Image 1 (cartoon, rainbow, N blue to C red):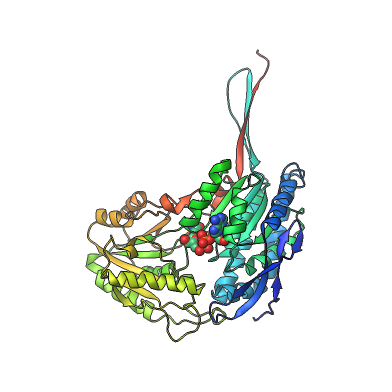
Image 2: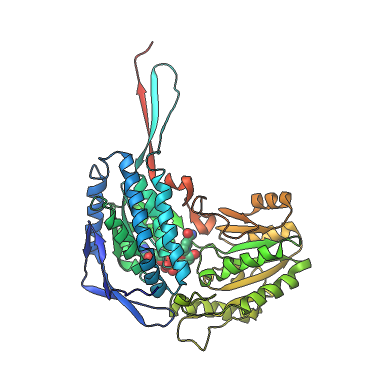
Length: 482
Ligand code: NAD
């Protein structure tokens, strides 16, 4: 359902909505028309948010109540997100270009993160360590303090909830920096937080430029942890800044993930996985299936089926829930087009697509399938972040593993086969933080997620992620001798 969108939006600092001197215009990628404007935070607002979070965390309002109180806060946030889902989904769909259905799913997933980590907020238990007579030793898990979280534009609401929920569950205060290209959905998420009645300063939202507010936040000694999701280039500059204060960091970066298809694979599972793996969200997914490695015996047949699938996708504006939606910006469209042009110049063959959708005003890229790609080509090694699939043949299991592991990334991977022994063997050999068998994106918010190599480090999602948001302290006590 259509919702009216306010024309001006603000930052949320220390429990208040705050205006700014400058405004940032947010536009709809499907039409290039303006959606709304948002107050742009500057360094002053960033400092106010860091100070408010520090006051709340260090012996402040977050550290006084029992953990059971945090359970209630998180459950209330989840309920408020659910109540705002329809409105939030409309805003997100308009500013981001994604389908209304996917935008709705993002809010529902965000609510799920808060429910999931609410269940853990009062179970962050330590342990006792046996040191023998004369000693008592135990460990506790303390909150970090202020968690600075830098969010990308592709799934702003669910990615923000992914780190905000465990951070709050563990007793941290948070400063979130929203992405410039898609900041409005996060304002709706923070309205849910406002309504849930957390202490002032527990969660703050800044819409600022990455090069200005983002760079300031990650360089500040007031940031006791950095959680970054975004590109490798930005991740590198954040790590360089974090080095100065030795600020612990979680890095969720890019990917060039491969699915390996054996002749015995269920074709329907493969095609359904290609559909979601590379064409969901127009391929703007860090864990997209951007490479399909197909056994030579079935390569041509699978390539033809995948090409048909891509050809059949109908594009349109997100509110119509089409098969295919625009890229986020003109710059991204140009980038993706340039990568495709370079691949063609290197000798790759665009079996389907390879160009922008010329008859549309929005930032639409054609669903694209490349064949004739060599492993050393740029298109086989670099992240495209668009609806562009590379299909490559292999002959032996060893060759498949070598090609799959042959990039600097290692976020996710997939294996399609009915042979369980082979599947398990491959899951051990594929260099990735998560391996899907017979269904791309088979995991959920409950399953640990994160990369190896240039895909980053640290884990989000699942129980494991909670421990990214605490510091372990050991207390070793010498007691009276027997
Ligand atoms: P990006 O790196 O351009 O921007 C991400 C965020 O960083 C934005 O909020 C931006 O303002 C901010 N930023 C930019 N420069 C900064 C600086 N110097 N200091 C601090 N913050 C700064 O990435 P993007 O284009 O928004 O997102 C696309 C990338 O994100 C892709 O590479 C994709 O693979 C990756 N990604 C990874 C995951 C994951 O979980 N691994 C999820 C989604 C996206």
